[in-house]
Image 1 (tube, protein in one colour):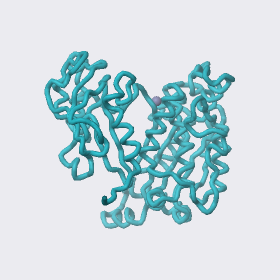
Image 2 (cartoon, rainbow, N blue to C red):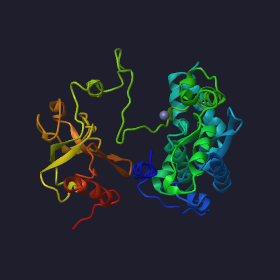
Image 3 (cartoon, protein in one colour):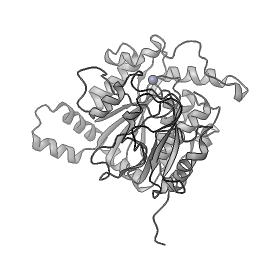
Image 4 (cartoon, rainbow, N blue to C red):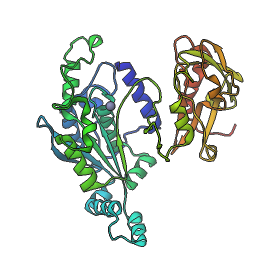
Length: 397
Ligand SMILES: [Zn+2]
């Protein structure tokens, strides 16, 4: 993971989550750059856990949306922090909201009528952790940025989330965070910094700290499991990782029967295509383009895309109704223009570029490598149009 890739991933994360960032609160909230001397995601810079701790302590004083809680100690004795983020009004009734989440989760002696009443009174409890696998450095760093933004932003969507949601932002591996960030930053020459850690990032079990969550042998797992299943019972639990290869990675186990009925059967088919059936290792494929769509402005009706084991998307029947739209798609059984493409017919009807409306923002899904060095001439407009189109407003001419 290079710093440039980290920065790119973070930019995508911010593009999706934060259509407009403005810290215009009456109370001033310290930005990461003021505190750390660099922006989260800047090249060749990692903040360590001590810096995160200092920063979160400061934000908890500056913001009435944040409460900092130590959920226990780590294997090496560091305090493990959880930031609780919600509106000041919700903070005043935190114990009540916790009780509601617990009663709804356990449903013990709760009638349907009471459950509905509790659901209306309560708030959605959302857990987002970060840093579990410490060399996946985006995990801990998104927490820094996430907590800052929820303290600082005053746009309507952020305020709505703060009103409706109680966010538990939890650092999953403080020891590993210090180990990785300190060894990375020890190199004085920024361009020579690389992740070379002397040992794995949990004192006893290294990379298997996620496998430990079912048996709670490690203090970090015990701390988190207590908060998750004895105290807060979040309705959404997001365990953050960062994994290669570049692009969207969809991980939807179990991979063998019996499959989860939550997933669209086509996801399963896509995941289960073996390399013998479907293998496009870096080839040029042709797609039909909707050049009346702002994202494809200035392009022709067809374009050649660079595909390198890239994702393609199947839109469900209600996609259009939900504001999801294909901008480029495979309209033939043989889209190959150059290179290899075994099983290319599986792509027929799948979308390669998609726009989805998410809250007040827009999400662009690019399956192909639109910025690949040999290919930008044909497809770079999709990226640059996206940058302008993202914050654009519709006007009458
Ligand atoms: Zn991981």
